Image 1: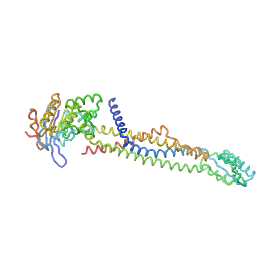
Image 2: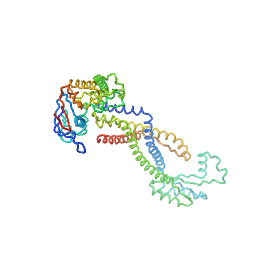
Image 3: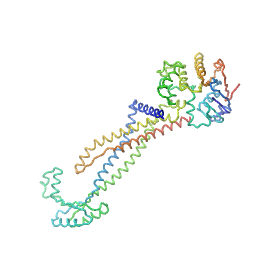
Amino acid sequence: MKHYLFLHWQSARIALVKILRQPVGSLLSLAMLSVAMALPLSLYLTVMSVQDWVGKLTATPQITLFMEQSAEEADIAAVGSALKHHPRVKGYTFVSKKQALTDLEKRNGLNGLTEGLDANPLPDAFVVTPTSLEPKQLELLQKELSGLPMVEEAQFDASWAKRLYGMVDLGKHLTLFLALALGVALVLITHNTIRMQILARRDEIEVSKLIGATDSFIRRPFLYHALWQGLLAGLVAWGLTSWLVAVANPAIAEFAQLYNEQVELRGLAPLELALVLAGAVLLAMLGARLAADHHLRRVSAS
Amino acid sequence: MIQFDQVTKRYPGGIDALKNLSFGIETGEMVFLAGHSGAGKSTLLKLISGLERATTGNVMVSGHNLSKLRRSQLPFVRQHIGVVFQDHKILFDRNVFDNVMLPLDIIGFDRREAARRVRAALDKVGLLGKEKVMPIRLSGGEQQRLCIARAVVHRPAVLIADEPSANLDRAYALDIMELFKSFHQVGVTVLISAHDETLMEDYGRRILRLKEGQFTA
């Protein structure tokens, strides 16, 4: 058993040395494999990050009631008391047009924004927190509230988030499809690189078979080659996506800041990285196995 | 050690390379196999080393019935037989030492013990000084010796040589024969094929003569 492990360790070592000794050829296939993996990985991270963010948004859906410009204080008080006694309203805050304007100025650093304006263009508003989080109930409440006197519009903050949710779902499907397609590509690429190697070592394989090499002995170096290639490609792909996240995050943060949101691309979690590496290794070895079996069948047939 | 029992080998196309052959070779015996090219010598040797399978009949090698073994078990039979191939089958992408190392790699020898054995085998065939040389720079006779070193490095119980003296001048061929004799003297069962019978007659060993797939007197 110890000896058996030693033989495997030896094959693995020799395969790694062979990869490192042909840096140009190995780099080309490594680049191909890692780019093929980095694509779905980046998309996955983007989709997951957006999902996290959307999840946070929709966790506390709010309905904003915008009053008409001509609304008087009495109208505002009427709406306020209606909200106070409404069974499906958990709470509300009132944002006066004045407050809204100072908020806006403060937030965007646009001091003296109103100087050029005749009057405050912003409406008074209520931000309503409903009791029920169920989408249907929310919709009903929104309709009901928009019917209150002097209410110009009841805007459901989460409705666009819901639309975004749909897009996230689409993104997930796209990621899955891309992952499947590029998984197949990974198998094919390793199949091809291993096939080239087998052809280059055809004589060695033939002689080895003649003097008693088993099929598994002949397959072993190629499987280990594929193992290293898959592992290295996985690590490079991880490096590429980490780099993408590092480069993209400041830009995204800056953009999100404009909407007073905090959005951040996240990197791969350790478990995800482990799964990606294991997947890459298995697919690469599958490709190598198929190539080796194909060749062995041909050799024994002749 | 080797036992053929009514063995027929028919190749696709209906050509019988061997017709109903029965014979035995004792452990430690040295036997020659004579016959013109096309007489079936190579086929007979391939049946012993498990490279071909008999169409009918049984081939027994050191207690294994090769006709009944599964294909996946044949490699292990081959690992106990040393074969000197007619066309040498030397690998030209590696030096002499690594060529001889190959069978030990396949069996899975410990590297240090293997290196010791490779040098012993090279010493035996007189190539010890050339272990780092690439085979392309060896002479025809040296390549033959390299092939012999590779065939004996794992100390097989049976040594098979297919036309080892072909393309060599007589003096060199005699050298090679002496080499085989020395393996026979340490207890290895040796079977050598050749189309030139004059070389064999000097040794006074049993000669199996093949003609069109059958033994002749």
